[in-house]
Image 1 (cartoon, rainbow, N blue to C red):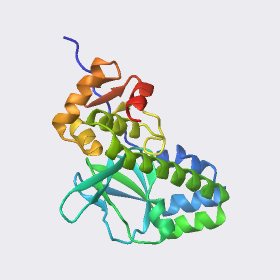
Image 2 (image 1 turned 90 degrees about the vertical axis):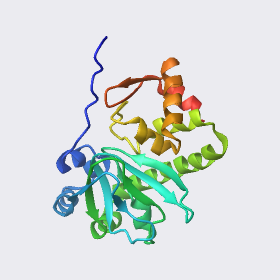
Image 3 (image 1 turned 45 degrees about the horizontal axis):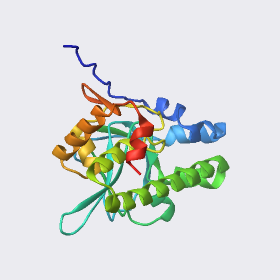
Image 4 (image 1 turned 60 degrees about the vertical axis):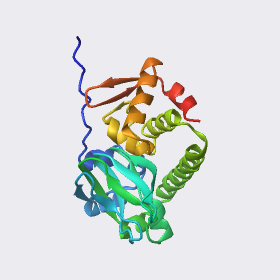
Length: 234
């Protein structure tokens, strides 16, 4: 029996995250110095809230390590998962631009490390760096398109398709700008992102493996046929 290769958990320093972020490389030198001086790091334990529904957000987030889930929980305890953010991604700009309380929870699905850029620095970039606004416009538009698709998916798709959409979401450039197709993602985490049971998720993955769409490796999932998954997710 061949031994499964373990998928390494990606981890970045703040300097590495900034260096690979297109918006940062497009800033002028003085703006890059300001961002680097103001950015900080925060550790979030698995299950801990990074952002809570109803609170005023004061920072823009970037993922250095781990996995963050967006979700909304109703008063009766039912929840809807909107998506996930993996290493290399930046998020939370919509709440900062609106200057309104958060309308969703941000939950760490595993121990995570988060880069934080203060609201004051974020607003300064918007007012003084045109390239930063271009980046935000594209990101907000892509995220809106994805969330609209999620809304339709939960009303129209079967459970296999919901799991396929969750996988596709984890390689979407907004959630995964590094373009990783080897996802350090457990079945439990994937089920959480797809808003299905772990048993349902396992059955879907078996179907995907039989169809040659994915391969399981120790500690994660490798996407072999992204176009095939995308077809299922529509």
